[in-house]
Structures are given as structure tokens and as C-alpha cells.
Image 1 (spheres, rainbow, N blue to C red):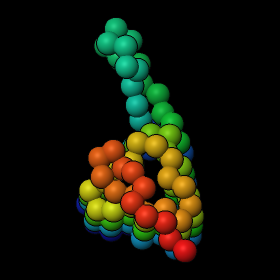
Image 2 (cartoon, rainbow, N blue to C red):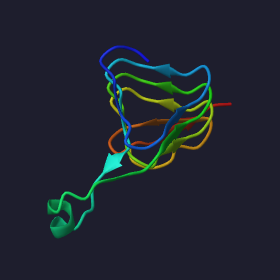
Image 3 (cartoon, one colour):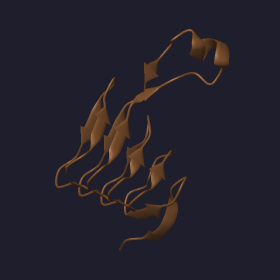
Length: 103
């Protein structure tokens, strides 16, 4: 993991072998209810994050709670990952979407 990164780990974060994690990457496991009354009660819970093997996460990307990133995936700089990323996918944007597939 590079400098200026954050892992907010109220839940398990698993990072596979041979991953590159760029500067300023944020990985979050903590989340809150959408309902304002529940949220105002202070209720907080977590969802684990799983990052596969040989994954490259570009600088300033954000990985949200409950996301699984498949092996060999590439996350573009500044991407906001809100859903699972399949193996061998290159994703980018906010929210992150598949840009291309690796061979």
C-alpha cells in the first residue's frame, strides 16, 4: 500500500498477493442505515471488502463496503467502486463501470 491511504476496517479486509495499491486509496468497511431515524440513532455496521490477487488500484480510488474485487482486476485512479468487480476487468468512473477486459 502506498502513502496517504486509509483502511477503515470495522470488518475484515482481505488483500490478495501481488497487489498494487496507489497513493490516497481509501477502503471502507463501515456503513450506516439509509433510513434517517435509524442513522440518527448512531447505528453503524460493517461489510467486509475482499481484494483478489494481482489487483492494481490506482491513486485516490475509493472501495466501498461489501465490495469484492476479482483477481487481475485494475481499478482506475479516482474510481468509486460501489459494486463487485469481476476478475480481469478494468473499471473506472463514479460509480465505477467496466471499461475493458484483460486477456
